[in-house]
Amino acid sequence: MRVLGVDPGLTRLGVGIVSFGKHRDLQFEHVEVLRTTPEQELPERITTLGDSIAKILDSQTIDAVAIERVFAGQNLPSVMGVAQITGVIIYIANTRGIPVTMYTPKEVKSRVTGYGAADKQQVTNMVTKILKLGQAPKPADAADALALAITHAWSLSKNQLALTSNRAGIRSGTPAQQAWKAAERASKNTSLNKKP
Image (cartoon, helix red, strand yellow):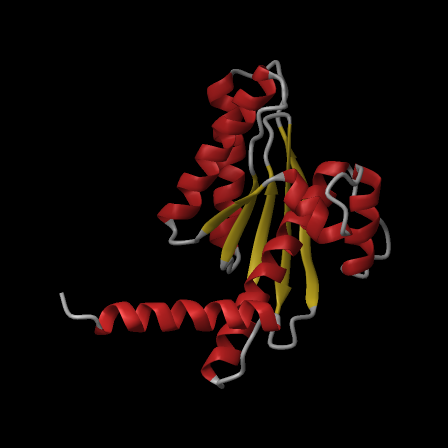
């Protein structure tokens, strides 16, 4: 399975692809930073970036897209640019039947480094280590895109493992989570068996 991570922006847009198989080991596939300049008109910038994303999705088998979610702490011009190109990417992926998932920066940092307030260098270091890269991906937009792809790949592989375990009759989760699920099932069965 191959995941495209996207760190959206109008000036610099990071894209990174990772893959994983049955053994859940992540493999580095591709990383680059797409660029436009503030001197270009907005429609031209969006078209340039959109066309580049479309070429990536059309030239490679991508099973899922992970995009960084816009958050309110950014300044308004930055939020607007990120939101505009994010919408375009969601549209492009959706028209190709590729599911899109969004993650906040804190979620990505937490999953990749174990610390939700990690700085960009810590994220870059962990991405380099996780993917066993010979050198750190630069600039930070490239590392962030790979971090998004890693986060979603881990999420997908965890879900696949849980699904396989459930099919095999293996219980997943902590004992407390299992007890909670059992109680939920029991209450549903009880309410279904009650006559109106």
